[in-house]
Amino acid sequence: MLNRLEKLVNTKAENVINAPKVNYSFLPDNGRLPLLISPVTGSLLLPEWIKDNKTIFFDKLREYGGILFRGFKIDSVEKFQDFVAAFEASPLEYRQRTSPRFEVAKNIYHSTTYPSDQEINMHSENSYALNWSRYIVFCCIEPAEERGETPIADNRSVLNYLSSETREKFLQKGVRYVRNISKELGLSWEEVFQTTDKNEVASECRRFGMGLEWKDDDRLTLIWNNGAIYAHPETGEKTWFNHAFFFNKYALSEELLAEFESDTELPFSTYYGDGTIISREEIAEIRSAYARAAVTFPWEKGDVLFLDNMMVSHGRKPYKGKREIIVSMF
Image (cartoon, rainbow, N blue to C red; front, side, top):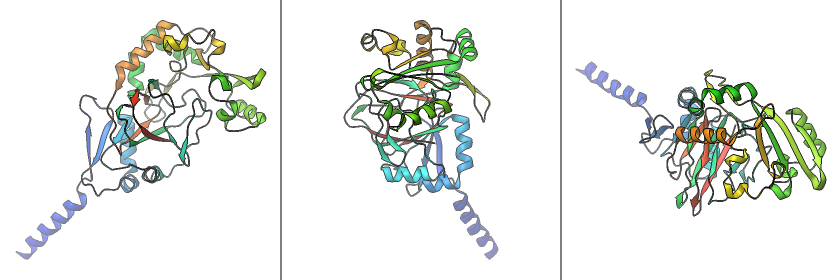
């Protein structure tokens, strides 16, 4: 009788030890992106779970491309820092900036200062650059009063939604980026490169294969080529990974486009890698592919969204009221 009782007690203790600490599920109507991970009990600390389950986490990320942690109450900069630190990777500094970013902690930034009444088109962070982040992580400190979602899209699906002709052109030619930098067009070159030394700018451009031309009034033009479609380094799957749409004039609203008389006045322009035009129809096709692949969900305070930057693109919906989303990249 005693042996049976001991066996029963030991079995219960073992079940407690091996009990799952998180639940895996999906958001309603969003398919398999993102994977939703939530705690079984409110006492589970997310950084500790990450430290103990890195292999499981990255296996899940490879499979789904994006993971939403909800219910862990990561609702402050300090808690988000602890979460990022659990990966034992150094967050990246935001270099070659395209929009103002305010740092809230070491290499942790407000997600964007883009006007709240405007939508941010879908893109993968820094995919225009020759040095980009593998992962991008968002944390909702305070959701907006209205809207302000961060839509996401599986870049493998975006690629599949493009016609075979468009895919082949981008695969063979890649993308050419032209950037005109001046204070009148947004950021100064000092802000873009985080230096006041033109020699450092030239050195960085050479390192990343960028052509540069200094013009009057401290204006700077950069030209470089990059790929458009890549094989994921871990899965081998082909993925759409570029800023051909985001930086193209035909992606702008008609009202905004009307403010510029020529391409040389635009902060950014994109072309095929051989310098030929990406047509208005092709940009419309890419926009449609993003829209078909996109999933959208409302932020909740304390949410953390972890994306494989190569697999999953993101954007931002317009919003009203205060909105505080912070971001880290590594």
